[in-house]
Image (cartoon, rainbow, N blue to C red; front, side, top):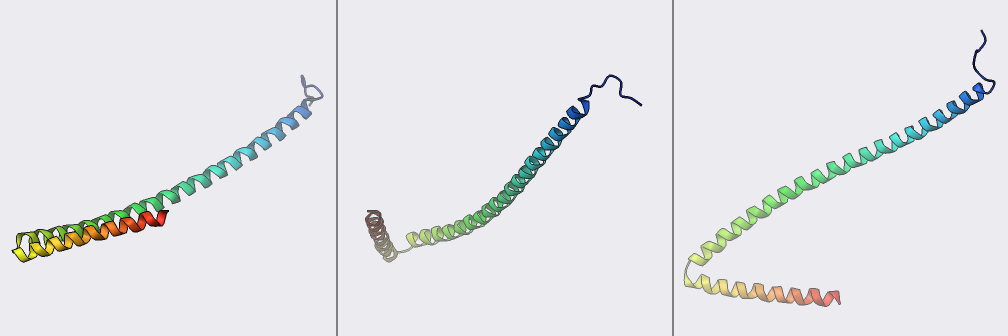
Length: 111
């Protein structure tokens, strides 16, 4: 059966369009592969960040427990006798002294 209405260059145009479609399909496939890789990387990063945040939450809870215990001991010490108040002043003065020494060492190390 003869092709009616088709010119002699129709096969060349079809071949050219077929080649172009294959090239665009390969291009699309590579982009989809890249997007899939990015999505998997993002998923891994999100899982890592969630794990980090969960660990951070447990660390904060343990620090909260330590601080609560320290505040209770400090309150008990301030409510007790005069000798403990004297000791509290010495400890407070020592902590302030340590703070200034550390501050001096840190500023000295930066220069």
